[in-house]
Image (cartoon, rainbow, N blue to C red; front, top):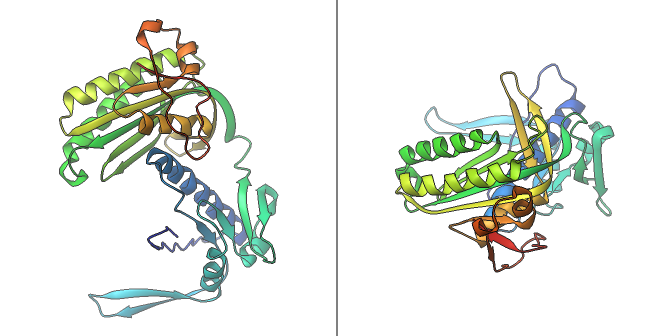
Length: 308
């Protein structure tokens, strides 16, 4: 459920030849990824948590109502009633399992928080697989672009923006972890120095790539109103998903949130934290100290912020 507009998305997780406990585990992993990606956008736009996810399991029925041109799918049954009841108990930014889903799920890889006087439980942490979840020192680049026009008028610009940012990120061997396009602009999240790239100059090459992204986007994309890039260095939480044709990294944690926050507090420039400044070993004349701005949602500046 998405608040406060009360928009609801009801997704049916249908799997053949699979145990129900495994299907619940897959739904939980999907829900966690949704919250991870929503959190990046939330921090970038300084918004409060709006998404909460309830998971139920069991039987339900579907009925199509209407004629050939206008049909509505009605879903009802015990599983639907369970999810409605569970959703009312959970706060935005959290995942809840209905009593039946909690009874049927594989509890080995879940850490939960019981809800007082209720059989439903809140998931606040989960084991995503020892081979997938790690902590690694890396440098994060968070690119936040704002359009002067609406996204519907900018299909060509979106393609050009993607080419510029991808080329510069790949030039410093960054992994592009997330890309979001929305009506007002777009966001790119890249990470330099994940385990397969043990380079020592990750902070320097990330700053240089960030500066090139900033300059090239302003020079070549006239429809952009603001190009903001935040660069941070530290211990990054990441997960690796091995797909049939490629692999996908997902990065999250305080360092990612801080990079996102820099783009909103210091719009229109390339900004970085002191760790990036020190590890980059770039001349001090390249980096100009900035006045520390406000805090938000636990994202704190422990030291000065610098502009490149």
